[in-house]
Length: 459
Image (cartoon, one colour):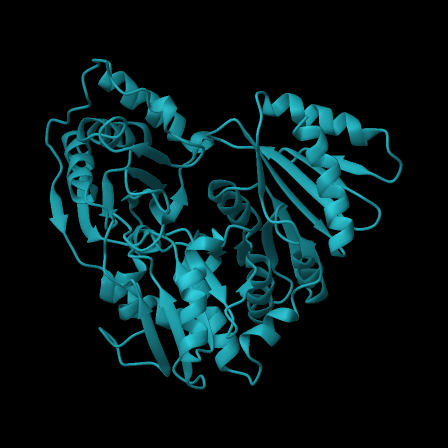
């Protein structure tokens, strides 16, 4: 029986188990379907360090070229490098990656020319359905003249572009520990921040797990999980570094710890970068998803910017940024988006902004970040429930009659109290889970709201 793509085509990408869900036949069908649905005739195709990556990239190219498209085979790429290619060359893109998922997974992220996202609402559902039809026996699209495959290495061009966007040549010397998690940061960091391709910067880089290894022998490449940054935290303190950086598997996300090894929240990083972008673009719009701290829109407004609240997910925030011509966007998950990077997300550029902010002044990372922290967050709390949507309605009913409470349904349910506390409850796209995020002006108010909602959710 053919794979059922609806089981592993998510809201804005594809993530499947290699062999049982994602196979060369499946990826080839998706390649053919992507060309047929979008009409795009040139595709850049890259892959991360997973063992299945090269074969899957070739399979996508087979399907695409058979359907008449030309393929630029970019080889090893971080996801943001693939976005760079799609933006710089104005071509569609396919990135073979499962990001931070465990080793047994792989997946696909697709974009249109200019790195414009393809999600379920913007073509991915049609690509899924067309690919499913091919797998179920419908003849695959076949052009009279097949397309060509041309190999090209973009690492040097990518490194040069990133250095053009944030100049680190004049900052004070910094010692930084970088944990690549055996992911694509081990490929891109030496090129952009080191001296592998371009002249060296005033950075003393202490590398951790730079060896490309899709089996992730040291820890999962997901820096949002506290267990996965323990090694980084210890190493930063051991060597007396100014700060530490951790990248996820495909290096489109970056997480930061200060000199004491303490995590700096993605909300604080969002606010910090927003102020830098607003200094260059006064009055501009800044996007933030509804899970980021309330401090973010406050700080954006205080700096003369226009804060825009969005749904969670890269295809949503990218679309809103493009529609509003926003200069920057940030998410609680450590995804950071830049207008001058085709509205796409890049962990590298975010890291460079942090390095620049620390290196151009006399405040350390902890002191710098403290200026952007105003509230106490709960972190994301997952609860397994039989009917997520029914539970959301139960919580909505619980709060709707209370005085001084407001709610909205932009993404799941958000409850806001008069004391400044708020909570968002939204269903997972992939599992029977509810995800709860709570924030309060202090710990006790946050915990009070958190526990009140969890009692309803878990009973």
